[in-house]
Length: 366
Image (tube, rainbow, N blue to C red; front, top):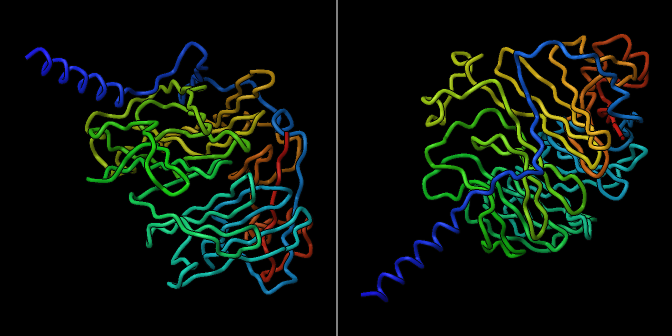
């Protein structure tokens, strides 16, 4: 009898240990992201970025970029996911199109869609996730097919480490599907769960992008669960360096709902988006669909800046658009052709842009 009790206790202890939720510690920095806060002291854009570069993408080739859905910066080149043509375009620092990865189809080495992609920082391999075929297809830096990795669960985002292993993330609740953040090996075999999301918490909010590469070794995650944490994940560790303290609460009836009427609940609940992070700067947005807070954290000076209204930001440098993508020291915005042609100032700055041109990248460095 004693042996049976001991076995039950061991199983119970191991189960509790496996489900233990990662928590912030004494080193976790709390950002007070209050939407109802007073207007902040104005901040200059030059406080966050000391260099702004405009890179018009060449229109000399037959490649016309229709919609930039994501960008990675690696080894001096920009890898652009065009969701319309379902291709990845490699562009150098001068805006010249170096190569185009376009292999849509059902044959081995092809994909039906590119839902997410990442670059392996150790060798430049291009990893493409195709939800329809539930696999990651891997190409070398020149676009040649190398292998594929089967993905058992439906994932919303992923990142690849230097050693070829992956982290997968999905905030959705789908019965039988793994949820939260977990690590797999280079063959897609499950290794460990890193972040759990309670099955009773189904509110998704608006999270267009979850994982952001900070540098070659560190991936940042702005969690979609009800903790409002920012995680840093390495090959062998995960920490909670930042946490948001928001002056809004998600109503209890919404927490268990995976379908939200945003117009009906505007001002009553909140969501987080536009999270970007480099080694020197963190930026993210909190909104309740009526008010909006833009938060900057300078890691060098450890100063936090907030912008709730347009006058909170002094545009002392020309940027024209806020960055949406970024990694390895740069944050990247996009000036679409239609946007440029609609504003006289931009037409004068880029007189060579026509309806047949490609977009302009805005590269912000700090």
